[in-house]
Image (tube, rainbow, N blue to C red; front, side, top):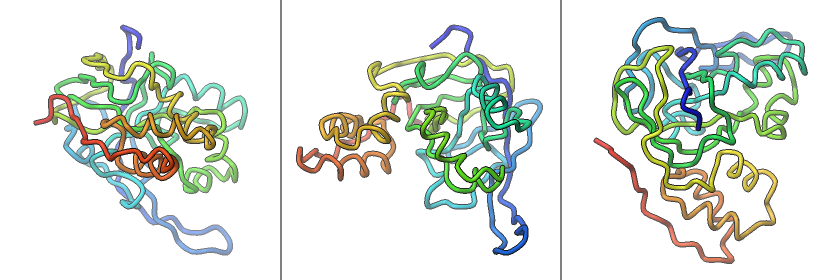
Length: 231
């Protein structure tokens, strides 16, 4: 993690209904988010003013904040010819100075007055593809490993654009977001890797359950979650 990691922009938005084009049904998404100027309150489940449409697969304590590296937008614009700008992937925080190789599961950060913890890589759903009308966009995100990641909130506080991101604690330096993505998406025959990743208590509950099912031959015990500095 670099010493110059910063928040470039903060985006929030409530779910909205999207009318179908041609045949199909109206669908609901929290994907459209707008940039916020000035401090925004980061609460336990999300930024004030933010929301998710599908709470079964998005949001909740383990996925309170979605983060995406600004450095990924240039290759996406080149590859797809679309006018991607910060927030185009529906993220809450667009950050500079970080990508999936720099960030580890369980990392604890201070951003503004808030303290947060890295919980899992992002797994984009079909709505990303539908929003941009690129049928395989979610698959491309997974294959390129330009996924971004999620944060849980340990201490609520105010956050604003241009805030520094300070690493407070790193418990699992070997388990970067990139390494976790590899085990989940490219290492399906790697029962040992799945078992070891599932043992990380700071990993989100949904990822632990998926990996533990995959590693049942190892009879992985369910770990207790360890949260740093929770209040």
